[in-house]
Length: 163
Image (cartoon, rainbow, N blue to C red; front, side, top):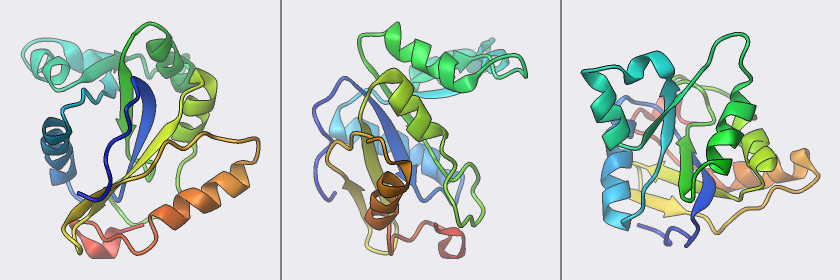
C-alpha cells in the first residue's frame, strides 16, 4: 500500500481504475486490511433475501434508482442519516475504457459536504495508493485536473481498459 487511508468517518471514496469484476473483491480485501467500513450502493430491489444479507454485510446500502429519484440527493441523504458512511464508487461508470470520468461522485461529495479520498488499484505496480483528503472547490475543472493527475499512469487488472 502507498499511503494510508485518512482518518475520516464520512467521505466519498473514488476508486480507479475499474477494469475487472475482481475489483469489488479487491476492495473488500483492502477494506479488511485498513480496518475501515467502506460502503457502496446498489439498487433497492437487490436487498431482498437471499443476496440482501451479503450486500449489507459487505457494506451495501439500498438506493432507489428509479427515474423519479435523484441519485445524488438519495446518497447525500445516506450521509446525513449515518454517523459513519464512506461511500466507494468507480467514477468511470463501467469496466470498459473511458476518456472522461462521470461527475456524480464529485456532486455527491459537494452535496453531502464531505471530502473525497482517491484510491488507485495499480496492478502494474502491485499497490493500492491512497490520497490525502480532497475537498472539492468551486472550480470543477481545476479539481478534475488534480483528480486525473493522481491516477496518471495507473494500470488496472485489464490494462487496455485503464483510465
